[in-house]
Image (cartoon, rainbow, N blue to C red; front, side, top):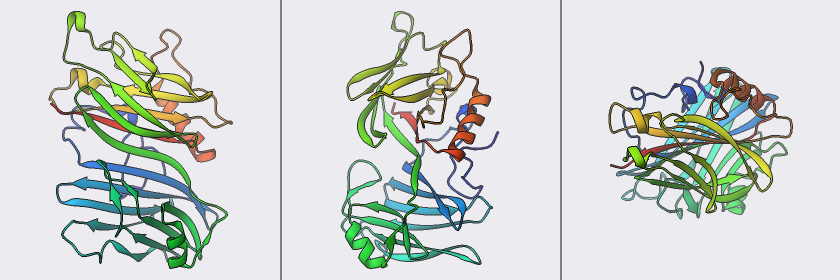
Length: 306
């Protein structure tokens, strides 16, 4: 089964197939990274722009890739280190996907302010320009970006289709999640240390409201459920096999939150258990629906700090 979304190229930043996690392929705790995928149209072709923010003891880093789905994949990386001058924190670069397609990347991170995560909170911009049009513009310094690039806003602006994030905790895992253009506080709670009367229970809360509660988690360590956020459907998937049955203490629980588009229908569930899912058929439906009418998917890797 191929990695999803299908617009990730072999040489790009990969999001692993949700149904294939095992202790063997998540044996190392990764660095703190956030990967965002945007879908756009360039010269009549569907393309994906991948923006990855990373943070480790050496500092911050930014990677940008453009994939035209025809195996032509271009990536550049800029490192932001505290002891460096601002030379690498501001600049531009040309990505040439093929002989006739040049894409300009502009960035200014000189005044960027960061929180606990790898993504900057304010004081920055990252812009993708194609044909003198701003296809993608990130950050709050929009006027500065348009002035620097001389580009006009594109009528076919890139659509945010996927975000992958690594989060860390012991029992509580929290992050910000934006569904249908509204930001929410998302908290995942699970204590797998107990047994017997302390059978682990998985709870997912949105803005302090309990949205998902899974009892008998050792039997229902994989599953899905539809929740409603402001009256709109969000499909929630979970896989906490590594938390409960991993051969080592290192392993992540995996969660996916997928918003619905008007054209989509809910994924078919097994008849005998509402918490079980036909993984292969739903995976194919997800890929097909995303190509035709992309919704948004948030994928979280929750790593336990022992």
